[in-house]
Amino acid sequence: MNEERTTVLIVEDEASIRKFIKINLNRNGFNVLEAESGEEALRILYAFNPQIVVLDIMLPGMDGFDVCRQIRKDKPGIAVIMLTARSQDDDKILGLELGADDYMVKPFNPLELVARIKTILRRMNISKESHEDVISFKNLLLDIKSQKFYKNNEEVDLTPTEFSILKVFMSNIGRALSRNELLNAVWGKYYLGDLKVLDVYIRRVREKIEDNPSKPVFIETVWGYGYRWRQQD
Ligand code: CA
Image (cartoon, helix red, strand yellow):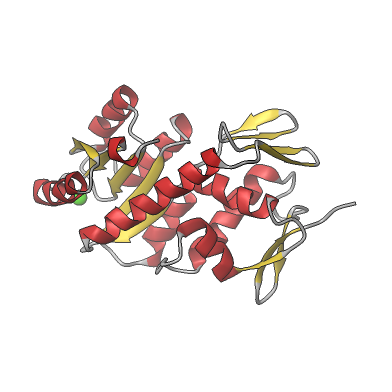
């Protein structure tokens, strides 16, 4: 995927904010599509297949959470960055629980948004350029090249972030990974967000890979430190 040809869909009802984001993304070489409602966003999404969606939460009609839910159902491989006007943790956490890859609190520096988009793209590209084709462990199989994941030979849909997290763990079997190490590996070195993001994501990943997510056998918590993919006999 060439960064120059990456298409970003901006979903925001306020024209001035949309325009402001568009100008900055264009300046950084992205193709930009715009939608002013959730309904319009989904129509554009199915027709044009953007790689990234910048999604405002507060929209008329369908809100950003509904749109995110729908994207995750139909197009799990698309990266979603949520925009929230409120700084409340609730909104951020709900967005992440629905499968958003990142979030930004308005007002934000557009260059920060560009940096976040580039981090996500780098992750998607690194996965594709990896030397290993597949990593398998017990009944799980991660296909790096095609970005697909299988449990018991059945495909399980993963978001780009969930895929990155699994890849980090499955490349470091038996090693305790600190929370910071994981955040850096998945969200980039300069991640300034909330540490809670990681816990939300670990929970999501456990729900997809574990038979009983409340009694995880793959990703175990290392209290006061982080997480570890358990070596099994
Ligand atoms: Ca709005």
